[in-house]
View (cartoon, rainbow, N blue to C red):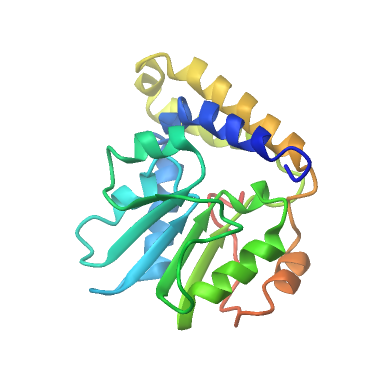
Length: 217
C-alpha cells in the first residue's frame, strides 16, 4: 500500500462489484445496527462514514435528521453508493478535505486494517472532529482471515437456505473473500491487538473497546 498506493485502490474497485453480497446476511445487518446504536446521531449534526464503500451504513442513516457524508477513495465503490446516499466525497482517508473541528461524529467500519498509515489517519480524524465528538472504529481481530465468517455463513444457510439461490451468491461470496485476502496480503500486519489499538488511539478518550460483528471485530 505504501509502496504501491494504487494496488489497494484497484482491489477496492474490484471488491465493489461483489461487496453487496454481504447485505443479505443477518450478522452484517446486525453489525450496522450496532454501530448506529453506539453512534446515536443527533438531529442537525454532521457525521462522516470514512471508507463508506457501497454505502450500506449510509443507507441505515436515512430518517435520522442528521447530515451524513460518505468518504471513499474508490470510484467503483462510490458509484454504487450513489444508489443509497446523496452526500459523497472521493478522498484519501490519510488526507481528509474537511476543516478543523467541524464534524460531530465519525464511523470507520472494516477499513482500518487496510490503512498503511493508521497514525496519520487517526491524526486527521482528531483534527476534523469537534471537541466532545465521537469516533467508532470497527476492525478485525488479529489472526483472522476473510474466511472467519464461514461458521456464521453455515448458520445462515441452515436458517435461510434460499439466500444462496439469489444471483449466484455463493460465487460472489467466494470472489468477495479472495479479493479481501489480497487486500490483507498487501498489509499483513494490520490486524491489531487491543493494546496496540489503545496505544494508537491515546489521543482520544477511549469509551470502550469491545467485541463486535459476532465477536470477529
